[in-house]
Image (cartoon, rainbow, N blue to C red; front, side, top):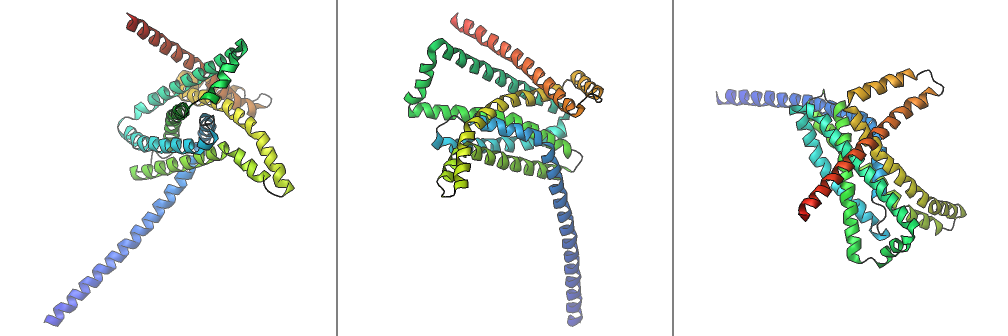
Length: 330
């Protein structure tokens, strides 16, 4: 009797182990399938954000330049950490908004776009004022300042650069997350969270890895020039000669990117402009070099809308600041 009971117990345990093994295999297959789906969706989402990634790279490379050469990587690392924090905030926020307040995504992106355009206009005006000061014979003051700058001044400059870059990154990251969310909006919430997290991590690593390389190109050139190979020396000289031009180009592209990204966010929230733009793009389908025009027209409209909105926001901010100043004086 006891032996029979023991055999029955062993049979039950064996059956239970078989069930557990079967469930484990099924779960493993499902997990593998989900992992494959997540990887595929992450690839698709990253491809869709490629345009913003280019702007993100140009903007950040330009924003972190201008600090002391031995502090460039430290500044890039500080901005990269700030970017990761931005995405830690943005990914859960995007998921919550998409579930509870889906209508708020576009208005929030438009606010970010307007701020980006405002910063672009401010930057252009600041550059113009510096050129005017040089023409007025004050260039020697501006040029002498960096030489006489104290360690505290350099620290303040770094802090300003980092905070400005992180602010800009927040808006660009928000657009990247929103685009990525749009590609997986019909998927289960868990898969959405995994895809957004992977996209956020991948974007940060790629963008700031390339930014670190760009700001240290002069070191790469010097290292090549120290080689014995004539080809390496020639390549090093070429890199050193091209680096200043690259940084100037990135400065221009970075400023243009503010209006391109900001304007595209604004236009996306203005159906009358977006529909009109779509109609115009279709109307020029038969023009000579139609492909070029179909690409250029939306960019020009985005820049125009971004510049206009940026000027309006700057005028409002300036007016509010002056009114506050008058109020404080009284």
